[in-house]
Length: 550
Image (cartoon, rainbow, N blue to C red; front, side, top):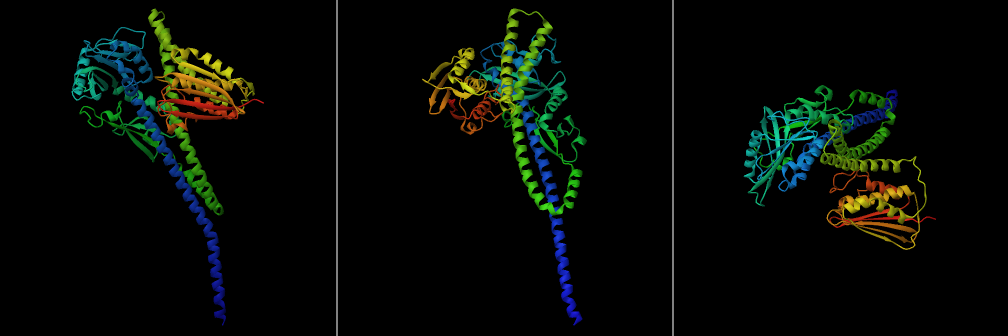
């Protein structure tokens, strides 16, 4: 009997032990699972961050490497068959200021006797038989029959196949070069070669100077992650060493080409090596820190489930925020930083030349003055928009609201831009309704808003240049309409262009992506509404509703 009575007691104790073990083990298991999930989440986030960074770096690098071919050969030199080659000096000077890797540009027309080389005055190629005399201009002209004959013979071979672009590797004076050229034809069937324009890239100089400089400029894009540029043999060209990258890294390859690969990829010439280099970014995950955090989580096992939920939620938010910041940084670097550096480099080159030479003839002085004025206007516009956006987004800035006559402000803005409108041949129409009441607003901010709308209409008008401004009262609102007949905005971009640093797919170079963002912010701060309607190739209409002053 005693034995039988003891069995239920033993069974109850066993079940109690199991319950206590489960009660203690479940939080510990949840805590450990939370620790493992958190560790895995951090590893995935670090890996994703590294992949986003390597994509940004490769995109920025390849875009700059193809810039001279796209911007200079494809766009600027389209009139080579009309103008003599030596008249392209200003174009080459701007290209040298913007792109450091072309050592020389060259041009040849079938109607001329010899090819013309445009060399950098401060970095002339070693294969030039006799260096030209000192020249205050950043571009010096030279001829070299031997090199010209070699290049033209090679390019005539490309012309037999009717190619528009050509790229190949060669050796000039014992130095490896990559040659990129565009071929012009007299006929639509590409049988009669009319001229050639191109540039030379000193591959030794590129390795020693260009890629290290690009690596230094890309530090901000890397967002603190160690990275390196690796050649095809695995050697470090620029950036961190292999030991500095740590054990885990992400690598992406890119072709060592200073031309868009689509122009040579299908039928690549035998003398174009098409070597591939890589950008390698470290996956910055601190295992020791993760282990310490895991230990703390195990000690707080009862909070493991809640911590896991919060951690997943915060990780998702951090991932989305990181993606948005990465996209904004990429677009800002592509559209603003490059545009700021170009006029500064051009103005500095012109200033250095004037300071070094002193007295120049009247023609050269006018050229330099025109160059400085144009680039200063371009730089000033970018800086004004950046400062303006900082002003209207600063919470410490207080608007001075009061009654404002919108028609007077519009007339003042049109008067201030009359030189630009006249130079562009714009047809101006201002329709001011009768008895339009004043609006409640800050006059300075409203002037900035209207100035950006007019500037956009001027900037993006092409063939048909007309600007129509309408001001009228509608109920308790004053409505401002600005219509142009410019290039228009695509439907995909229409809802995005009012965000900061966002520019449409067809936007031309020279903008900051802040104009419509400033307009949207001012309209919101004044309690109004902004409406955009646009058709590509037809024009854009901007409608602003502002409340009437009490």
